[in-house]
Length: 134
Image 1 (spheres, rainbow, N blue to C red):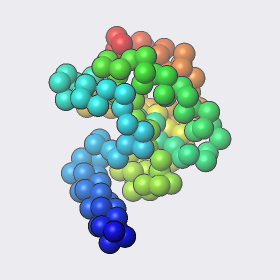
Image 2 (cartoon, one colour):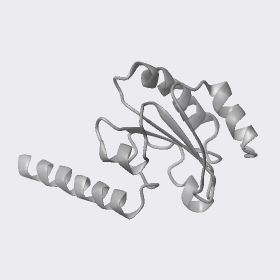
Image 3 (cartoon, helix red, strand yellow):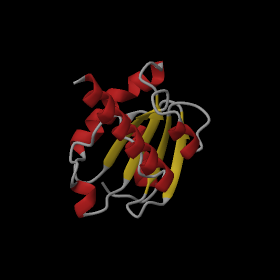
Image 4 (cartoon, helix red, strand yellow):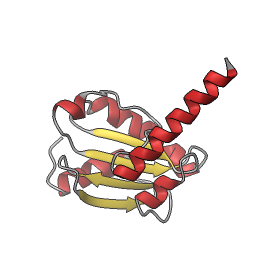
């Protein structure tokens, strides 16, 4: 049974590594989206937050991200990546400090990024300033 568990972990790690090499925009999600199939049916804007589970500002953002994920399910994809658990993601997204939020258009283009804590109101204001209706 332990062998099977190690094999599953290795397979998952290889799959994640391959996904990262193909397209950094397809990140390993530390928290699953509330509507997993939503982006497959219709592309939606995406907010990627890169941080760490033990980082104080990152922990303060966690409930904000969770609430956005819930409130905008099907209209916004919200992803958290713990760069201490998957450090190659920091390189793939070219971040310098955590937390960093990256705003992507529905077509995958990066629209903006922010370094540091960002409140829910500021996140929604940024989307509006970018001309994205949620």
